[in-house]
Length: 104
Image (tube, rainbow, N blue to C red; front, side, top):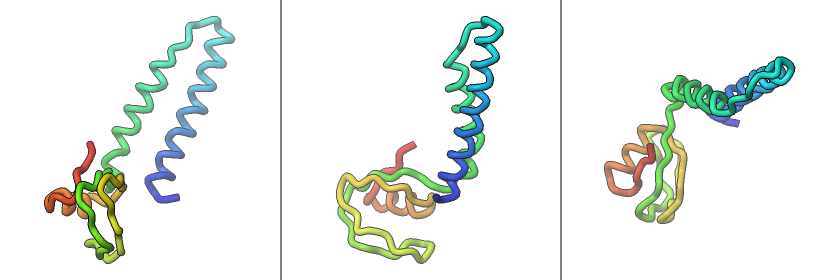
């Protein structure tokens, strides 16, 4: 697993455990369960971690053979319609050259 996946896994695992304990407590106390709070908490936590993730989603618009990225790694080949998760610098280079389009 990459660092981003580990971070997301850890976050979701922690939130699910907390949510389970919260539901159990509410059931015991006869209180109403609000599932929307769980999703809003996840969104808040993900937004806090987003600045730690140095990757973007890119949709490939033009075919491209294997190339060496800015970090020295070999990428590709890319086909039209491929969806890739790439580091910010490389994603921006692909977008600036018209080869890809980043997704926010």
